[in-house]
Every structure is written in C-alpha cells, then in structure tokens.
Amino acid sequence: MIRRFITETLLWLAAAAGSVCMVLVILAYTLNISLIMFRTGSMEPTIPTGSVAVVQEIQATEVQVGDILTVDREGELPVTHRVTAVTEGSHAQERIIRMQGDANTTEDPHP
Image (tube, rainbow, N blue to C red):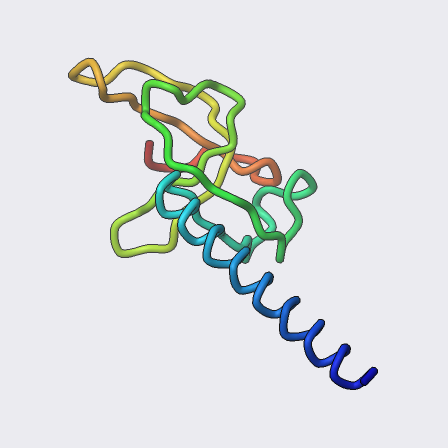
C-alpha cells in the first residue's frame, strides 16, 4: 500500500515536472528567450565565469548606455558586454552600439 502510494506520487511529480518543462519551452519560444553561459571573465565581478543568464531579444532602438547586451557575431561566439555608447545609424531602426566588458580595460574593437 505504501509502496504504491510512493510510486504514484513520484509518477505524478514527474508528470508535473514534464508539464512545467513544456510550458517553459513554449514561453521561451513565443517570448524569444534563450539561456547563455558565460565562458570568460570579461564581465566579472558583475557576472562571474560559469554563470547562466536568461536573454531576451529586443529592438536596437531600446538599447541604452549601461545595459548589458548579448550580441551575435558572424562566425564567432556571441559577446555579452556593457553598452558604453549608442548612436543613430543610417536609418531609423539602426543603432551603432559600442560595448566593453566590466573587467576589460579597453572598449570592444568593433561596434
């Protein structure tokens, strides 16, 4: 009797955990959210190496100086650094964003 109760309870907990995972995957897809892991210490002490963060896509027009931003780079891993300057680009939706890691002594070489 007790064994059956424990077995059924564990099955219900597993089913509930699976349901929560499915809901989280659907929310992540619909809200354009992903997880990233920090492999370097360029943002220490704010974000220690090995930390995991939730990242949500935003429009370039929403970026402000002081924000921590993750930017995809063609052919390279994404970079996550603090925004140091934002200037308008050649059209209304374009922004030129300069960034620097909190632990770095110089600004990133490419905007």
